[in-house]
Length: 309
Image (cartoon, rainbow, N blue to C red):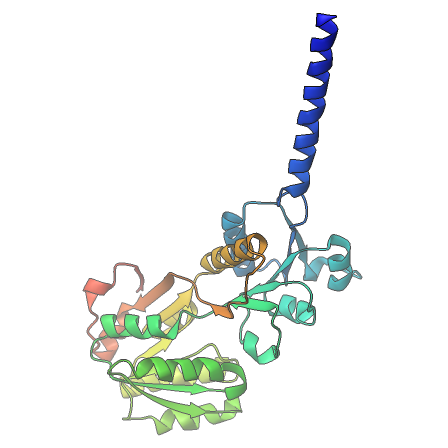
């Protein structure tokens, strides 16, 4: 009898442990109720880096669809099939495909001029493709202390928010901003020439109206002819002759997106943070351009910079 009672106790204990384990699985975020779907525009290297950065922080399983590889299947169909709790939209095409969804939190990354296609989407937040204006102005001041007047050109419908933030941030410094609005790429050369003798540096922002192959060529020629350095957002422009570029690395964008996903899935009271900036920048400096322009670089603040010869 004693053996039977002990055996019965062992069976009940085993059943209890199984029940506890099942309840744990049902309550575990990684197993039930918290799914992330990454919608990626294409297998473009920067997009892949964003995805890797996201996985570096968000350590759970992630479903992924690549729009360029979907064929006849729509993104909407995949979303209905997977039923994610959070969507990561990588690239502008991914954001365009998901922006009308209102009942699922969406985090976008590597999306140029995202604000121009969003309206009152309270469920959408994103990692800004730019470094914060305050940080960029700080870097420029430290590396190029002689720069006091900066010129920029922007399309209000695309980068108006960024231009406004730059001007507001500059008020806290001794840097003066001269900004011109433009709606057509063909008007950019005229406005650049208008700044001749009025600025110490031309700031090229990621604005698809302002930055085209033709306007970039013109701005770099203006730089040489007027000994006025160009600051950009792209390493490519530095290789072409711009003095400096300050940008957010795709991997770092993915990491920030991963942090936001963790917040959303762990905090029921989470509120949309709006645009989010990465914490570290990628910095490139063209020393040959500096020499040609007669620019003295403060080398004490170049520790994180990659030099382009």
